[in-house]
Image (cartoon, rainbow, N blue to C red):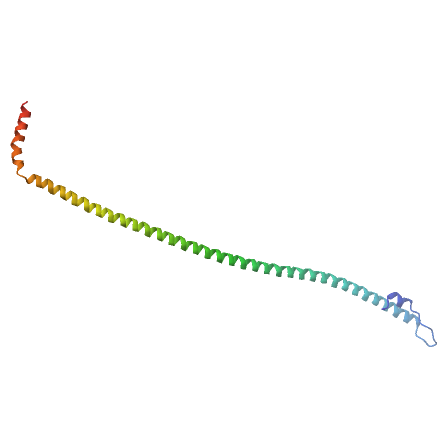
Length: 165
């Protein structure tokens, strides 16, 4: 067990002939007591300071651990967001490709339908032209028949009668 300042103060030495000067010894002991008390005080202050610093160190260590965990969680979240974004992009691409295929197929079907309608209209126009040609030819044939000449004087006579009447 270490000495206390009180132990030094209460220490008594035996006397002998031709011993040390008692006043000098007492003065020296008083100085030792003061220095010893000062060292004890400093030691106590340093221990308190060490405890404070240790508490701060523990606090900062906890903060560091928390930040490390937070960074790890943030990295994991970022990786997850990146992964989800990649998956979503792939889904969007697939959906776009499906839509593009559907649009192309619809356009091809409409194009085929229009093409068939055009062909049908061409056939109908050809039939109409053939019928019209036949009609015109039949009318021309009627005009070239000799019966028109005999109808002409009668028609003038009918006109003349109408104007007189």
